Amino acid sequence: MPENESSQPADFIRAAVIEDLRTGRFSRVHTRFPPEPNGYLHIGHAKAICIDFGIAAEFGGICNLRFDDTNPVKEEVEYVESILQDIRWLGFDWDDRLFYASDYFERLYEFAVALIRKGKAYVCDLSADEIREYRGTLTQPGRESPFRNRAVEENLDLFARMRAGEFPDGSRTVRAKIDMASPNINLRDPVMYRILHASHHRTGDAWCIYPMYDFAHGQSDSIEGITHSLCSLEYEIHRPLYDWFLDELEIYRPRQIEFARLNISYTVLSKRKLLRLVQGGHVRGWDDPRMPTLSGLRRRGYTPEAIRNFCERIGVAKKDSIVDLALLEHCLREDLNRRAPRVMGVLRPLRVVIENYPEGLVEEFDTLKNPEDPAAGTRKVPFSRVLYIEQDDFREMPPPKYYRLAPGREVRLRSAYFVKCVKAVRDDRGNLVELRCTYDPATRGGDAPDGRKVKATLHWVSAAHAVPAEVRLYDRLFTKENPDETDDGSDFLANLSPHSLETLSGCWVEPSLAGAKVGAIYQFERQGYFCVDPDSAAAKLVFNRSVALKDEWAKIEKAQRTR
Ligand code: ATP
Ligand code: MG
Image (tube, rainbow, N blue to C red; front, side, top):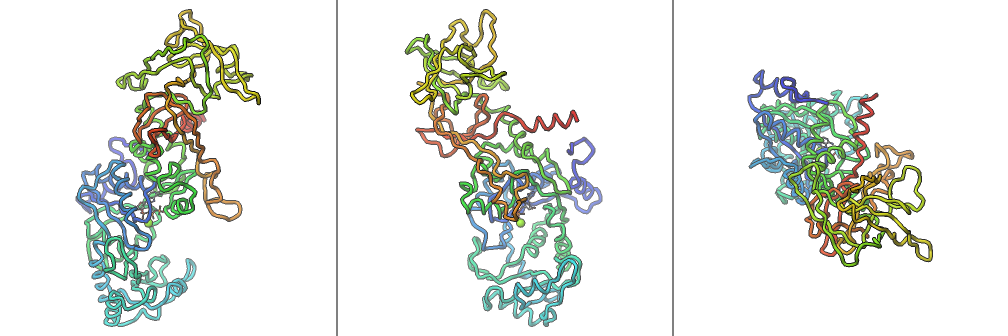
């Protein structure tokens, strides 16, 4: 894991930037984050955002936000808006530097004309299938298009008429004239422009030809004066083409540097796959708390701090790897442990009647809001004769090492009293209905003056005061560490977990939570961290469990240390 030691750069990108500033290749740092608005941002994008905005800030530079909106068919305003919101939420700011590749359509067109004039580009009449066929393979060189040697004037005329809308979709393309025998397939006369009679979310029907990503990206970087164009590893084999266009156009050339994509176990991080989860109804939407999207993570209770900390801990490497989902959860626990107020909530309630507690009496106990943060102060928790505890906290026949409530056994109710179970009441069919208990008034506040000990402390709520709640518990969305791995050749959907969501509707939470705000996050004692969901209504709060308390990652780290 890279540490930011005083003189040592934390990773190879920062080392490259330092080197460029030292040698004078660049005298400033200007990066960009270039999302395509064809889906919601996910945690992989958060990594890229932290790198792009983070490195610029570290070197006193700036970072642009640029939408790579060159494909009108898959792009939508909804995505643009969600992306703006998610980047801001993550804590980054592009000031007034919000750009769109579509802002440059006219200039990109002129660039293409310039290449045609130079004899470096041509209009090709091959169909998409034919182009693929002519392209060759990794082991076989491609064949030249029969249209490759068209005269400059004819190319210019055809290109102008493509723009004017004279030809149907797919009938012609503009291609760069590079090398059909190049070992890099990206250099085998790549397509620069295609015909697409489709409305664009920003330029409307002004264009019926659209530039390809490779023809738009480098030139957009160049126009904006980007110094370091940082992107994920799959663009490495596009870099020669990135450089070729800029060199042939004789315009300013930024430096592209690639880093490994983020992969997380039990998770898919590809907008195409995430879209299938949404469209197939496998999740409730892009912001379903099981989704690795930033909006899903936010709804789940992830904080920007936890996500930024995660991105820092995984570091920046050149080699692809899979990060353990447990590390992401660990980063969240670390953050929430510090800031989440403690409350009591009972998820699977079991009624308890304290037989010797006076009817109608209500006592209020002062309880710390957060032992990790004394400044948070205390809250009042009401206690009365009828309570709810967790069904799991009682066993009629306790197995060895089960220290919680059982007939005849005494336990502590957090911050309140010691109580002892005298009887378990069952209905005709044998179902457990309630417990009858007694309390010891001398243990007020939760300690026995005679020094007697109990082995368990339970959370509870007062039945008359508690607020009804629905709680949604989440598990991994996929059963396989690598969801793309299937036994029978079917796709990743075959690995969806049937247990990723469990909804508990009869829960009770302490009254201090009445009116809790959407997005607020609490630690329910002994149960984990819970975030108030937008589905909450006056009659019923809805909580998402962000993460349980048990920290898998701490265990993994400990095992690694002792190995
Ligand atoms: P996806 O595969 O999810 O569709 P993409 O690369 O097509 O991702 P873009 O909108 O083009 O999505 O990505 C914007 C930026 O985010 C790019 O610079 C890309 O390199 C980076 N990025 C995308 N996915 C990841 C990831 N998993 N890890 C790190 N960076 C990523
Ligand atoms: Mg992309």
